[in-house]
Length: 437
Image (cartoon, rainbow, N blue to C red; front, side):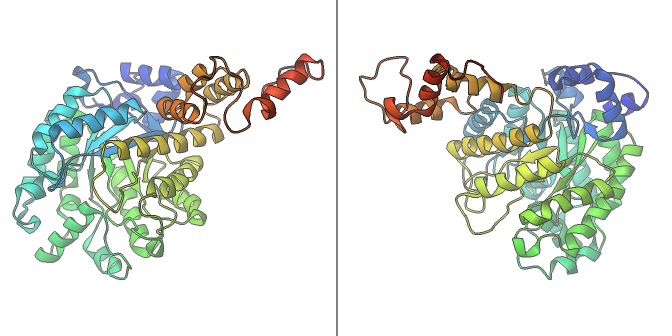
């Protein structure tokens, strides 16, 4: 049985117990959230045997972040992508997706699954498109075979663009930037070439049977997500979302866990509405959003433009955030791009958890603030999301002869530091209490 089927039968699985412990929730709450379809535990049975650490993705849990990785036809190799995977996890990625589109797709995926204890996701059509001269040559059984192959390898969740229908393609034709999802554009091309409905939609039950067998979580892909602010919240996007909601219920009826993927490029004033629309149409299935990017004018800084939107989306109820790196729209990210993207999204996720009052979310903030007031630099660095950068920035402008235990930084120096002065005021009797902020 799948996690969803066990939960609906009243069974608390070991994976639910593990999630409850890590989230500071009681196990019955986790079971009830999974049973309701409002939380998923992506945990392929094959990957569990290899040491997968189960996590919960849902509104009752801490906000999770995903890091997209994988080679391209032009750049990178297996070893390079493994280094990026380990970098992403070291800085706090909760899941990783292998989106390889170049050579050695199978080998890269298998090495990632074997090497990591976090859930691994894929977009199976990428592998099939790489195998074919043209995606129009695809037969539905070809795709089912790839999905089954990846499930056997241990993939924990898969993005499939089942909800892009023939009737939606003309709607996307009205857009400034068209269809920006790789998977969505490939499906649209296949439908247009054959004059037939989306094969992933027509073979949805066959796909459910495969995913249920290994308890692979659906990540219903948003093939019509907007790729520019001009296209945000348009007819095409919401037409697809309505179909995604129907398919989510259909998959859950067949025992499959389901997440819903979301936009994209969305201005700040439309983010809350987008999250609420997903909850309404998709029965509150966990919402997994890319960004959203809140302005189009900052190539090279889209880890920032999107982290702004990601924090807002998570605050309003998104369950998982797909990171964006500085290279978004520009090229394949390198190791430092991955680090910057993960850190930006850890900040966004943590900020949302603070706003949503998740159990224990503020503990780290309070501990770091106490260390800052005590001038305990090493403890500050230890608690920082990126200790190396914090340590380097602090040290780079201090005199080389500075004594250990100094009670200032180069911003104010030893005489004008407000926290140092506040400590002196306390010791003089002006304020003897130590208050929690």
